[in-house]
Amino acid sequence: MSELSHHLLDREIRERPPEYYGPNLSPVGLELRAQELGTGVHALMATVPPKDNNGVVFGTKASLVIDSGVTPGIGAQVQRVAKEVTDRPLRYLANTTYHGDHTFGNIAFPDDVTVITSRENRDNMHDLAYEKEMRSRNMYGAEAEFDAFTAWRLPDVVFDTYAEIDLGDTTVELHRFGPGNGPGDTIVYVPSARTAWTGNFLCAAGSSHMMLQGGPVPYIQGLRAMKAGLPELETIVPGHGPIGDGPQAIDALLAYLERLQEEVSTAYQAGVPIDDVYARCTDPWADGLDPEFAARLDAYPSPPAPMHADFLGLCRQLHRICVMMTYRICEKVS
Ligand SMILES: [Zn+2]
Image (cartoon, rainbow, N blue to C red; front, side, top):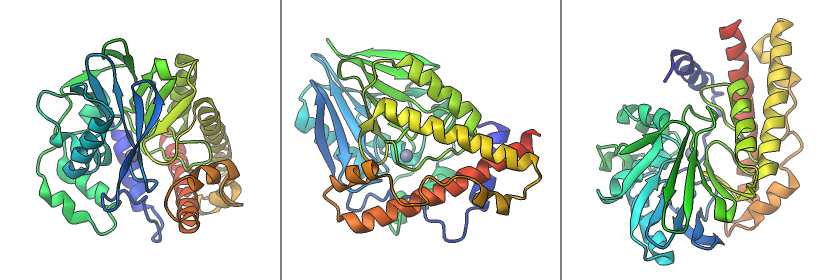
């Protein structure tokens, strides 16, 4: 992690409002259900959002799983559900980010499964105790589950910007378009289904956004690169929350980040103190959830009313953190 991003991450955590609650990513109550998106292409969707989603893709020779869950127990569940949709041998596990809720389950996969991710993701997987501490904020009482494992299985293979995996008549592409939520966000794209697993990089339009380490400017560049690099993209399976329309999600996040950068840097240059900047920035969730996003939430089996309220609260808190991070970057680079 670069010095600037480490500084920003530390600062972001210290400056979280006292009432801040992170998304609930606890394994308790997490059930994955397969949803077919194309031949040999299945999302493994958490029945309770925003707990982590996964995926499985298979060809004539082999299968590949996307992300491994927040604990080895969830890693085992991912494999169980994947086996229900394919008997092709599991050969690959792709990690979309280094965060523990996507990688702690790596250890539950057999040794002959090749774990692959971007170089930046692997470079950030060196301090298990720290990552457990970070993720324990999302465990909602299930923190003790982290005591059950003491190793973090690292990826076997890394790539810089692009890699391709042949599963037999089905190709999976791995892309790193640039830093976004984290430094190494990896997009897993299946051209035959025009579907991308986007990890923490991109959620369905209307969802909250979180940038942790790079700020809006590199994130905008990464999203533009994704838009140009995947012109046939139709569907995204985010790491958290409902499946979405890919181009719509990219455009929504681009618009959000461009406006955030513009509004915060203008206020900063005018000498407005951070505590007054929040009210000056457009809050897309000020009047509630986007109706289309709310309708996507209604398709979940969970009770809709508390889920809507939780999501709205989360979106507004993450928005506040995005404003604060952008402001701190203005200070740091000016
Ligand atoms: Zn995540």
